[in-house]
Image (tube, rainbow, N blue to C red):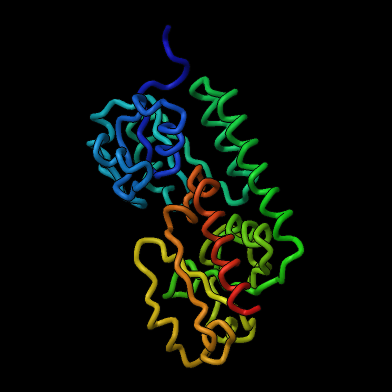
Amino acid sequence: MSKIGPQRIVCLTEETTELLYLLGEEDRIVGISAYTERPPQAKEEKPRVSAFINGNIKRIKDLEPDLVIGFSDIQAQLSHDLVKEGLNVLITNQRSLEEIFQTILMVGSLIGKSEQVSKLVESYKKKLNEIKERSSSKPKLKVFFQEWDHPIITGIRWVSELLEIVGAVDCFGHLKEKSLAKDRIISLHEVADAKPDLIIGSWCGKPVDFEWVRTREEWKDIPAIKNDKIFEMDPAIILQPGPALFEAGILEMDRILEEVRSSLS
């Protein structure tokens, strides 16, 4: 029986690759991003054809995909170039947890896996609700989530929403509606004024420089620095809007909050 939907898919970002493997549809994938880490076998089995902003247009075209899937306005130029080559391109721009769920459902529908992804999304929602209920009565710690260092960028909307679910207060939650990273740029002084209890860093594309974080004169007196509550999360599980977020990211964030609560009690 022939499969429904696109048969040759290029995934410009990791979350679609991970989802297709999770659904047992990895044979549809003909190209992936060089930044793909999940699942580990993908980078061994599939040709890498793009970074995040740029891609090898000729190589992608030579793969004869019937669909190219990407994520974020940052890939606007890449998608433009691919469309000009006559390729079918789907770029999503999800920012909230609900938008992530809707994107998973859409991709599943495109390949005839609506029932499977519906169950998957329901399982993720159930997990989030259980964590939220468990965390609701615990002390509310103030968290500064740092996505980048120069300039300093605070967390995207779904990160802010996950912080709320694990019973934390996002120091810059008022910026979560800003869809573009440039609109979430903050200063050292603003972090100092927010007085976070802990800092969680996830610098997309490079490791957190803990020494840099600890030695900023402007925020040296905040509780997070004085109590040495600085943590790092893998961007692959917290900054990718896909399965890893719900299967690993939320659990790691919850673990970090529990560790800090225990140490301060």
